[in-house]
Length: 87
Picture 1 (spheres, rainbow, N blue to C red):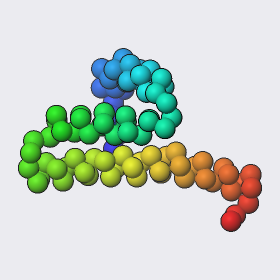
Picture 2: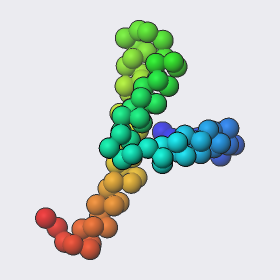
Picture 3: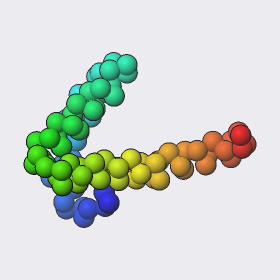
């Protein structure tokens, strides 16, 4: 879960701002590749080379995906259903 204590988040805020600033200056057709490179680099430099560690990294990515959908995409879709009706 991404819900770490507020004081633990503080150490990341400047780095996140720096990364977001860089990403906002990238052409939209290149953005996903740049984000993929960045996240992959973090994972490869953090996790050791072993099946167990790769499983952990993939688990983190899966949880990120699910949390993004649960907290952002689903509520966005619900709002659009209210605006436009069901398919």
